[in-house]
Image 1 (cartoon, helix red, strand yellow):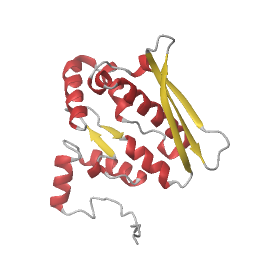
Image 2 (tube, helix red, strand yellow; image 1 turned 45 degrees about the horizontal axis):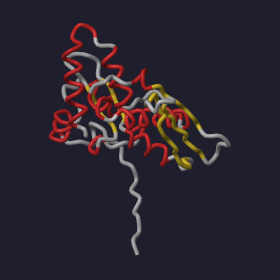
Image 3 (cartoon, helix red, strand yellow; image 1 turned 90 degrees about the horizontal axis):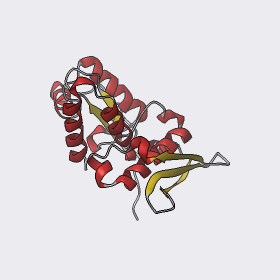
Length: 193
């Protein structure tokens, strides 16, 4: 007979890490982070109780730009499951009359709600035509819709975004170093696959 041991969450702090662990964390998880940025990231990690070592949550920083904290789809799902109120998720694609992919939908059910949190996203608003959006647009659209519905159903997720959402934001808001940022973002996203 197997038993699942539930371990108590232990916050990750600079005070509980050795200097070597802090350096390892800064080298691999929060590359190029200032102390303030590292503390901010740890605040997100601890508030959401997500594990950066298994890619529930990411720290992304390019040069001297402000960092972006991104939660992976499994991080969103973990927060919802941990609430004890998640009762399931339904998602799918939307196609026009000719069968062309035009978007995706998702519904997130809560045990304490009569109606699900429901959302639809249009492909044209998110599809960058690059990276995973080029390779798997239906999958990316469904993930984006699911994340939006999870965020709607679980307010503790407000203010955090997924890789799929941030990829399009980076491409649209690039500024003078746009090509470099786009290339680095594509490399980072492909490494995470």
